[in-house]
Image (tube, rainbow, N blue to C red; front, top):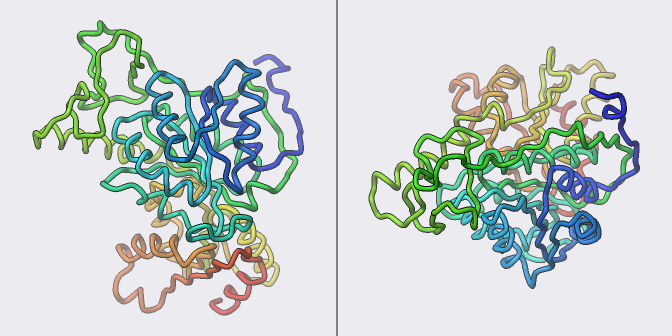
Length: 390
């Protein structure tokens, strides 16, 4: 690799800007969106930068049309993205399900804010975690990423685009009001060093092409509208060429494909961070902005001789079941701080309930530390809980 290709650029950057610039670095060439606090800077930056690059930006009339636009652009061959917050994310849910059903690669960024409804537009929240998994109707699988820094916002924006293109699905990138608006100095890599996944184009004759093969390999060939390959697109259950079907056998193949492309590639999709877990007796399970306070609480507890560690999922969905079993099943207690009523805690209890015996459950605890009033959880609050269970 040439020396100048390894150089990085040190810049002071906001979280929302990092997401926008990461997506552009990954090749996003179509953005459709509607302004909503606290995600608006993503659209603003894309509206300025994309025309300079010969890429397309459009402000739509609402979030429903924004979601429809990025699906259409994806089907026409574009790498597409939109960005929103809670109320807009709710409006996009049906379109996200459609994107998953027709297997159109796209990315939806949700910079979370307090809710429900209009809620707290300028305050952080983590209350959309379950919505990111279950917000669409039907058994649609989900890939959902959640960074905890400006640098990771840049990196996971790239990763979200790559995963969408690789697995032909709609990927959700979560952020939150504080992470979206905080500024940190980060090292932007040379664009030549960034791994970018592009969809693979079919090379077979058009008459052999199946848009929805039964046992696909990933990345799998993906034809776009106008390239001479005949296929149909519908939200109805469909066969290998995309045409509607009521046959149970063909529907079963379709649903298996949607599940298996996630289930069979768990190791590629899931990312976790283990922090000081080697000798920990107590564990903290935290994601996103709350994990920053959790890491500080771990360091504070260690200074007091308390053996605490933290496990952090960068991939929220699929949920990191195996990592939880590996790192947390022997801990005295697991503390789960989050800015909601206990969404990660519920997922944690599902996993741990399956591996703890009845007797062990009597002596172990999953302890939730929850806020939903627009304020962050601070390290001292987490440390207090650590002291109570040590």
